[in-house]
Length: 124
Image 1 (cartoon, rainbow, N blue to C red):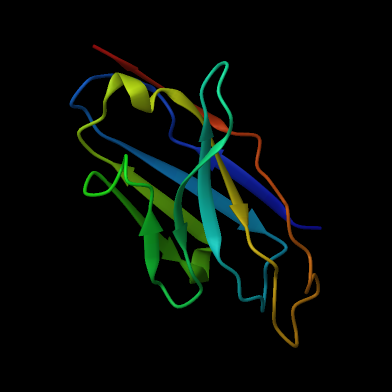
Image 2 (image 1 turned 120 degrees about the horizontal axis):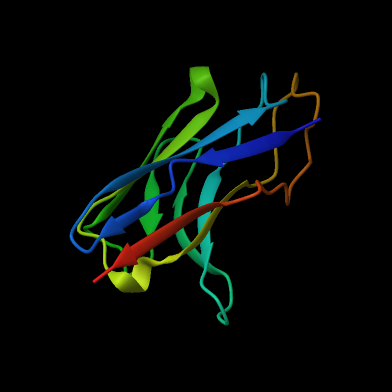
């Protein structure tokens, strides 16, 4: 069974920083991309950032230059470092993986697994 657990959300002042973590289980011997999404009240869920299995990253324009996505594959963990936070960054943040791949990956082919989310609130 694949499971993702997010943590690190908090309430901060504008200009502050947070580091979100996404810890995975059931991912042994798997290759996968990871993504962070966020959803603010009354808004659609939006893609924030993706880190591919090779470590390359992409970011939404709204967070480019402020957020950094990194990963520690040995710990099956992704980290989203968020600097210069703005009130518009307030949202529930979720992580997910792309399709799992690998000859020895027990859950190869599985995708669309989501964590429960972690709340980020930025006050002005």
